[in-house]
Amino acid sequence: MTTTSHAYFPTATLVTLAAAALTASLGISVASVLLPTLARSFSATVSEVQFVVLSYLLSVTVTIVTAGRLGDLFGHRKVLIAGLLIFMTASVLCAVAPTLNLLIAGRAVQGIGGAVLIALSMSLARQLIPTERLGTAMGLLGTTSAIGTALGPSLGGAILTLGNWQMAFWLLAAIAGGVFVLSVTVIERSDPPKGATFKDLDCLGTLLLMATLILYGFAASGKTSLLPISTNVLILGALITSVFFVIIERRATSPLVPMTLLKDRTTGTGFIMNIAVGTVMMSTLVVGPFFLSFSLELNEAVIGLVLAVGPAVTALSGFPAGRLTDRFGAFQIMIVGILQMIAGLLCLAFLPRYFGVYGYVGALIVLTPAFQMFLAANNTAVLAKASKDQQGRLSGLLGLSRNLGLMTGASAMSTLFVIVLGTGNAAQAPVNEVADAFSITFVLAAALTSTTLLIALFSRVGQNTRETK
Image (tube, rainbow, N blue to C red; front, side, top):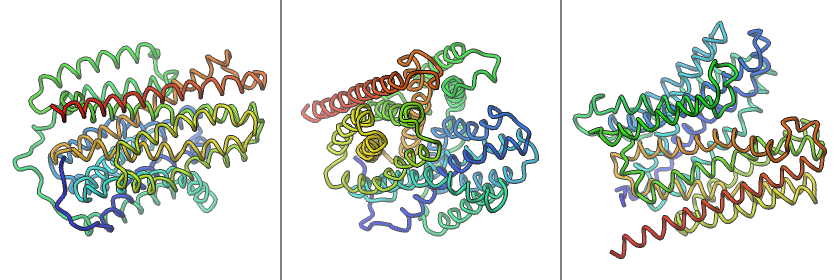
């Protein structure tokens, strides 16, 4: 296990890294509320303007591992500062974009900067924060990311009330500029590996991974109607490119993703669990509104308030989850988080049927802190043993695995709900059938989370076996 030489807790550094994570999450959430206005401004369809959000998410997902690897090669501080400059410049380009296509292109570039902020804020936390306080750092980064997600829609709405949609991107540029100043003045310099060049970047592996993620991202997002390719073809293409990626990584002298990392039980299972938990997390956002609308028959305003409970509790629980991780250990808090997650999903499956919206809110209050406990503990477990030359890469892989889970959940969990319901039109289904489909979906989500528990225990047993040899 690596340790840091710092004997103090660098609060200013952690605040700066948290601000970087907040900036990246605001980049996602602020734009979502702008879509109706953008549709009117550019005379575009809903499907077309949704690429303003999708291009950012895809760009983050596709480039996050490469962003982390660049940090390992050229210095985490230097690459974080470059990412802030990219984010700031792209925000200005978005603000002055005269056409929707240029706005979407600007958002894709902005997503590259967002990927750097997500990956490098975690890797710098590992590098600069004392090991015994790493859980607190991971928890705070999770908290600020959740605050950005929760704050974005209301902030975007306020901006539209006061001005126009361009102001949202000017604000993002200003926030990135402020974090840039903090990063330059607060984060201490460190020497990058000597002799590192772009030749050390696995270009072929990078291109294959990007191709795989782009194909899978379009398939999982449900945007295939805008492409002359079916979902099955996209998934097949993603499988083929992923196979070639593995082959190339096995033979590369400096691979983007060394297969030895994935073979390590703590690291490999950490990524798998991140995907599974991300899938379950997304189910509350893509399945919950159908139940609230068509079973409990709530109006849009009330549904929005109910769904806001999750991000609000997430923002409040991230920092305590990190402190618990430092005090009791990553594995212990991970197990507690998964067990509470299972309980919360079962509460969500049944309590709303008996107690209505109060049962739904109560279930979210049980469920959401469990997500934060797992994420803080899992991120800490993976990064605590990372060597200096792997910290950025592992941070990128953690971000990638979480995003893969969210993308998978958006597609798979909503598809599961439709299969159980038996019709794609929930508005035409009887109220009791919508409730039944909702309950079954979350019981199955609890079952998926139970497999995550088994994976965590398997990882622990494997680690203990190696230590006794």
